[in-house]
Image (cartoon, rainbow, N blue to C red; front, side, top):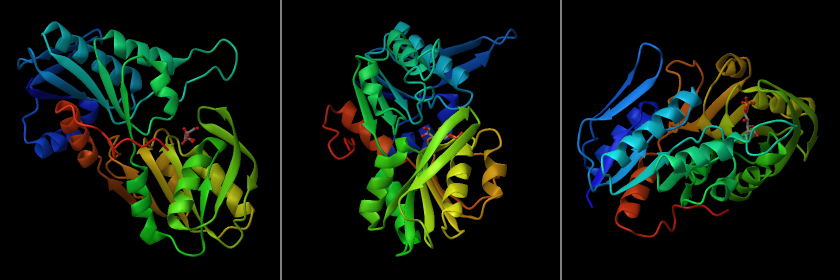
Length: 312
Ligand code: R5P
């Protein structure tokens, strides 16, 4: 089977880099919108009998990008693709992996069901909010991680007086990995989410007094979590300069303004999601191109993903 690479509109630039690394051309496709708002996709090049990888983050607007991924997969199936893999650098809806209150939908499960129903036979994803994503679907999931790259980028910025801060309990394990690798202590902020854009902090566990906070998380969405965590560690006596590291820099809503109001020295994110052009923030973007190119080539050649998959 020959390899084909299709770029969804959410991940065009990243897909172009991956195509360059693999030394193939992107498969031509058209993605258009009918006047009534319906998306319509068409494959211009043939994919018959081919091993197709569709790169599409289900980033904001997630409904639009998810439907586009589903339509591209359906087009591949109907055009006789040999196998279709979804490469999803950022998996939207993954935060809705349980019912936090009554009468809520479990969107993560539904998104996984829809992906499977569209004909996708395997998923490659990066630092999904819920590592349980594998348990939400019966198709294979290669869960890759950018955490080691984030740690290496944070290393030269951290010193003896740094403290790694988990902005909520969900990020405690991630913070522990940073702290162990960088040889600095960690602290955990206890957060409660009030609404999509509002969070409340009750306390901080761990010693932050006189230390420079490095807040680590899987994503920066509205920045509310980072801001609340920063204010909490500051109240607990931390020094003011702030470093933030997260795999997915969504920068939704008021995120840029929020972060700009803080003494942020450095923000490290990946290109899983297209960052806003001008944030005025000291943002360092690490590319996922090498990780994704390697994973795609190994899957295509039926080679092991050992070393790329992060089971921690
Ligand atoms: C939540 O558990 C996630 O790990 C992030 O902390 C959260 O999604 C970030 O969202 P926001 O930036 O809107 O607070």
